[in-house]
Structures are given as C-alpha cells and as structure tokens.
Length: 466
Figure 1: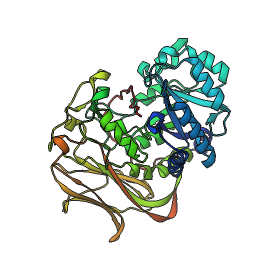
Figure 2: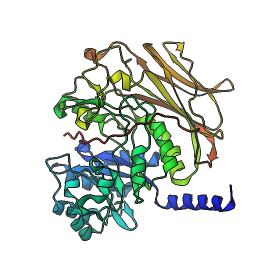
Figure 3: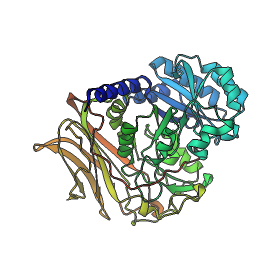
C-alpha cells in the first residue's frame, strides 16, 4: 500500500472517531412505570455495552410520556448517559403537532444529558414524512440536528421530502432481510449514495404475533447480529442505531426482560407468551468489541467468551401459529416460516487466539465449526450448525489445547410446544472469562461475508402498552 493511501486511511478513521456513535431505540411507552432506579439500571447496562445513548421513541397522546421523560433525563444526568427523542408518528393517538415537539425540544434540548451533534440537539423520528414541512419551523425554533426515519419513501424520497433541504441526515429502518435470504447492504448503499450523514440500523431478530395489532410474521434473524456488524465495519456510517432495547412484542429487545413487559402478551392477544424465559442479554456481550471496532477501527478484547442463540422449537415440531415469513402489510411475498428461520444453532465467540467449538444436543455432537474466523487471531468468530429435528439439552463449548475457554448449557430443544404453537423467538445465552487484554487493530476483523442478494424492507408500527 502506498504511503499516501496509508495516511488517507488513518485520516478516515480519525474523522470517523469524531462522529461515530451507537444508539439503542428505546420504546418509552414500554417503560410506563419505570422508577429512576430502573432507568439507571438500564442505562448502566447500556454503558457497559458501549452504547452512547437511548433514542426515546415517544408516541403522541401517551399519558406517561412527560413523567417518564423527566425521570429518564434525571437518571441520565446521574449516570452520565445521553438521550434524544425519536418522535413516533405511527404510534400513540396520532401524528405529533409541531408545537408539542418544539415544547419538548425547548425543555430538554439544552439539558446536559441530551445528545448533541455539532453542538445541536440531535432528534429523530419513526416515520412521519407527511409532516416534513413542520420541521422547517421546528428546526428554526429549536436549532436541532434532524435525522428522521422516513423509510417508507426510500432514501431519495426521504431526502427530497417536503421539497427537500429539511433533513440533516437520514435513518433507515431496513434492518432485516426479506424471505429466505441473508442480509445485504443494498438498502444502506442507497442512503450512503446521498452523501449526507447516515444512521445505519442493526437488529438481531424479528418475530411478532399480536392479534390486537394484526401482526403475525417473522423476518430472518439467524446470523444477522454478526453479519450486520461486519457490514457496519465495512460501511462506516456516521451513526448506528440498534433496533431495539425493549420492543418485546417484535422480539428484537437486547435489554433485560422487565416483569411488567410480560403483560403485553395478554394485552396484545398473543397465543403464547413468547417473551417469558427468552432472555436476549447475551447479545450485548458482543457489543463492546463490535462497537469499539466501528468507532475506533480497533478494539481491545477484555473478555473471551461465547454467545449462542436459537429457537427452542424445531420448525416442523409444532403448529406455526399462523405466522408467516414476510408480511403482506409490506407488500412482500409470503413464505412458510420454517423456510425463512433455519433449524440451526448460532454461536459467536470473542477470542484472543484461535480455538475449537463444539455443539451437542441431547448429548449428541452436531459437528460444529466456525463459518468465519478473525483474520489475525484476535477478534470475533462466528458459526452455525444444523440441528434438524434433534431435541434435548443444548451445550455449546469453546476449547483451546484441551482446556475449556467458555461453555453454555442452554435451553433444551423441545418438540412439545405450548398449545401446539411454535415459539419463533430466540433464546440467547452467554459465558465469558477475562483475558490478557489483546488488541485487534484491523478493521476487517473477520473473513469476508458471502451471502445471497436480498433487499431489506422497512417496518412500520411499534407495540406500546401500559
């Protein structure tokens, strides 16, 4: 590589570090009874994962918004965490009036806990492009930095909404692949082609079955959590937003399961409780390394460990519950869910040197191997292994030189389902140990991804409850 190229690459990484940040989408309506202590607990967990801020999704007309926003900012100031608003135009009782948005931004925009970019209070939306012209007034009144999600219009349409010149950057909700395909970056590239700041979405999963919201479909998760961070490292967007911290109804929560959240299953008309005993906390274990690699171009491995996730029911074991792969609400071709969500056990490891992986179900070895390995030894490893119709206790173990590095005795695969309905949510487990703190200075920390081409599709609508 020429010296000029090396210098340019270093400059690009330096510039990226100035603006790069990772946020987690947080449904404020799902924290309707939080105390300051619970806010601080969630914020501390987010800080441990190297997340910079919560994007507070607020629906208009929610009677708890004002109270919980105040508690959230109080907690954030106590623990030195950041917040910003994502005004939800599809949730709540209707679209946000511009005067109410102005009031919130004037009240909190100067708060030390409010996330700022270029000295301006950062603000986003969930949809709402029909009200694009409102933001001319809102921006002039609040001096905010505006990065909406207007994915329903596509990248170019969102950029030109309201006559153009309104957005300072754009956020895409296109975090999942369509049908029986792995994720690609094709949608992201349409935003990056605009040459404005881009907030790239990252999500580990999607499954919802709530009759009260007329929602019952899944999109492929599978290896998505690992694949997506590789794409983020390659594309280096200005920001990343994780979808989500606590949207339990769509199964892409990475935060802790709050006991009160389980009421959504009954209130939303779910045929089974697909949240209970289905933790996702293990996905956060991968974030410090993944986020530091994105922000800085390098990361220090503090812990070695392994994370595993899988569905507890083989596809053919029980009834589908009427769940489809894809959804007609997005104009998509429908697939049987078992064609989209694979009968596999997925695992990622953080390792300082190469190691071996094994997976057993009911004591029987499945012959697991790595699909992708860290290029220079230290970094993230990932793999998956078919389990077909096998049932029994799942054990994932990483060994090196005959010694166990980390091991997980996870939930059993079970062909007996509650009310004969498959749970298409993921069970996630993890196990970590301290390391000698090795640093990986490579951007391309894993071998190249090989995946099928697939367009991503946006999703409209959240599950708010209280």
